[in-house]
Image (cartoon, rainbow, N blue to C red; front, side, top):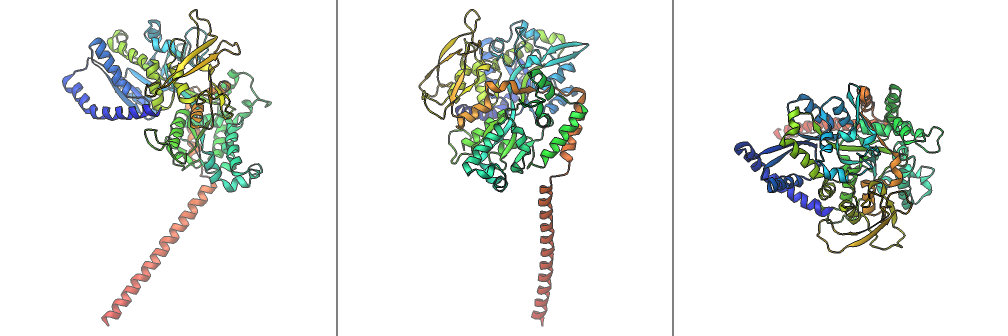
Length: 574
């Protein structure tokens, strides 16, 4: 992972030098035959893949294709850009709820044409069936999200997006710093006061991992050490898990038995629910250090905060930067800023980002621009490129592994399995990610056993290791279990990168709010403008009193000095 980041940084620097030259060539000489206009959020792709695609097309077709790559900061910014119609794009990448909105408003078209004409073999052969299916089984997460197309027509989200990255919303925290910053509160607590320092650290980890993990954000013992997302949807997701937690907690009288029922509960946004979530979040506000949009992943590494509501990809990045001190991720930090990412057992939001096709005139879909656009999209889903891209940005690709292509599984095992064949080491645990992969034999039947050799994905290190996986419980899936130490850097990164199999039925998909979107916006404004917590007010008052006192003292001293200088001057004149 760190080697690719180093290579990517060099490539990006080189691209930065070339950018003015390329722009000049395209505008003055018109040297490009075709342009692909792509819009994506910031820091979300290995831009080396853009030029490698252009080079591949030129070598094969003798055609110069330019990928004009632009970025945006939020989904809403992207939406407004498209809505104005001033700029047109061949591809846009955005989040699941925004894809639903764009499809409902007719601003994007489906991939039915590309799928039916076998234009995306990389994606169709390698996308994880956990996320998307196209065989009628409707077993993937995207298959469960309906898309309203108007005139009573409906489809599913998997046909309106080519999945790009996915992940979870969880809790990123530094247990050592929690104990250090909240020592007095912890020692006054009935449970924590019984523990030694190391036991308190271990208990913090257990608390956030527990069934009731999100509730710990409201716990007074963690007051003032955390920040939460300045993001309406993400923080609403956390609020609804707390407000309706009895519906998600096994053993509760209100617990909903089926995933479908719990997912519906997770998506409630009626007026009563919105008011309840608002009040819940206002209470949370009393416990937090502040709101953040993108600074949390930095603040937790620099130890400004100890707890952060975080996206899994940002968590991977922060865990890595806490472990390595240099940008190339080669020099280990001493001491390490040891960060953990957890999805509480009660569950969490699972989100998806995908590429979409903005709606064009009919003739566009028979053009070479359209063909190259689809080919570029599928190029990103070549397993080798998907590995490079995923290791560059820290998020988890939609691409899995099948019997014919093991590159993604090879990358995961190379990066995260640290057992080195030491089967008896007590600290190693088996971390199950079987749900993500599909392995079948030549007849399409589930594979019962797979033996593979794992090597450095980039060929920079010698040596290899052999792994054998079996379908031990005869459920039609090979048991892909990674032997790792979950307290190690590798283990903590793995947890952020891939949820464990036992957790996937507690990951809930948040749909677009639809007609209630304005009500949610108002709720969020009420949460943010609600008076500051008392402890923050006290600090501000003390600061203001001290500042005013300082100004008063300063003026008195200055007045005295001026008076004294006049007296001295008179004495000298006399």
